[in-house]
Image (spheres, rainbow, N blue to C red):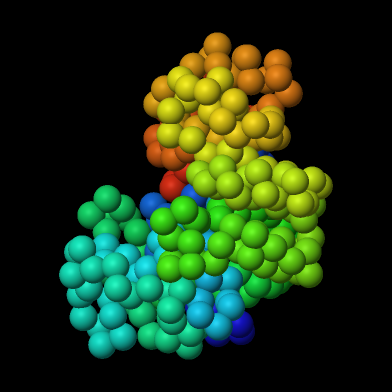
Length: 289
């Protein structure tokens, strides 16, 4: 942990934490600036004023909950343990079949990202969620920064059950238990595209704040009917979101937090619609409001 903190001090000058009146969420940390879902990405987002850090979860064969957007080593961002490219269609580097020690053999930070040309490159591995909590909190304490909240995505699908990840109940129970034993549930919301997860946590852990992830904001009525209850947060892809939809969802008592919004112009348009938060790869572009 000490090595990580020393590295962060070397690559990123300390600055005063910006203040925002909306929930500014660093997507996978600050993916536009640092390798995604790594501790340096979380620290960068924190320094840029993010009030909440958005992370994705996978589980190893020895039961470690780690940060990863895919349940396998993504060929776009990772090199194999020999430092070689992983073929584009290769999904065989299955995290759920690896020990955490094996996961640490993959470099997911030095490959150039064409979609994120400003991303700093360095050797990076996928961290344990509990280590992210510990390091980020320590960094915040040491540098007089506000400790962030977390938007934690459970990545699962019916097709992946028992193959790429645990089943819904096991996965959800493990995540909720880990959060409860570390930073506490009051600093977290859990989100998922998998409505099975949202329903299970709603029924089993009613005190957990939930966000439903969806791709099409124009179908909010159908989506809410399918889910079967009203979660606290509606989190859609931003392009089809309208001011009218935001107003209706607010009247229902829900918050609206769109993803993934990567220009200041887009953020301003959404904030003018009165959204409650913004999920972005570039917290540095967030307007001060």
